Amino acid sequence: MRQAKTLAMVLVLLAVLPAGAHHSSAMFDDKKEVTVTGVVKEFQYTNPHSWLLVDTKGPNGEITTWGFEGEGPSTLQRAGIRLSDFKPGTRITITGRPMKDGRPAAIWVKATRNTDNKVFTPRPAPVIP
Image (cartoon, rainbow, N blue to C red; front, side):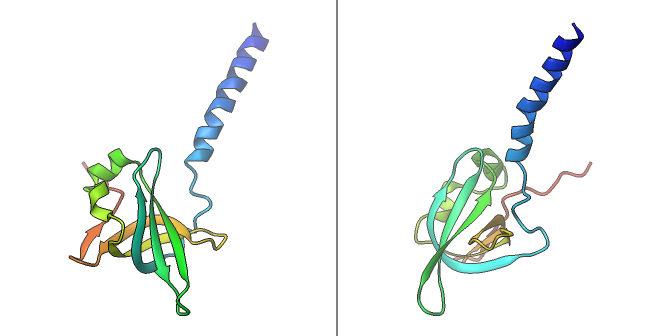
């Protein structure tokens, strides 16, 4: 009986660990910020995480696509962000916490749509009782 309980506990832990790892932000540098200006290539408004892909032009004219990870659609909607806010071709300035390994990706912190200067923050402010 004791072995069965131990086995059950091990199986529960093994089932939970991948979920915790999935939601880890360890690959992003929480002490740095990067800001780029470019044109929306694609807004992947999907679960469990959305991605806002932005084409930026370097000094030599070379295009680099940056990926900014955001929350899933339900959380973005609560923050007032809709798929239609970032249509392909929309010019934006976006800030995020960059990947530690230097790849052009970050956690989305704030985006400003350049046509009307509207600011979008993907994580709603916490409710303080």
